[in-house]
Length: 69
Image 1 (cartoon, one colour):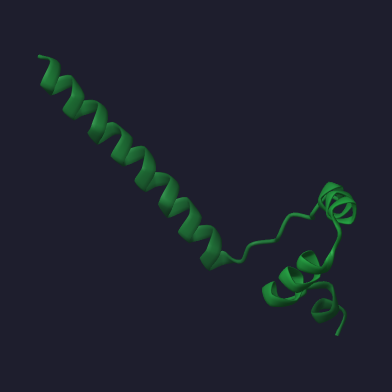
Image 2 (cartoon, one colour):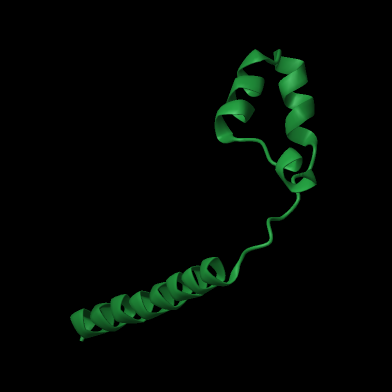
């Protein structure tokens, strides 16, 4: 039950942010947000995206190197 109370839906959060006045919104944005603990599948997906990014950067640099030659 406590886990459900800690997390609000996106719709609820956006409704709250729309109703705040400017100074209240600034104060709310200054509060830090805790990091989310990712599960195994989420971590695997993020690491896969990181590896894909590194691979694609290598491909782009290789193609640029070949174009310069």
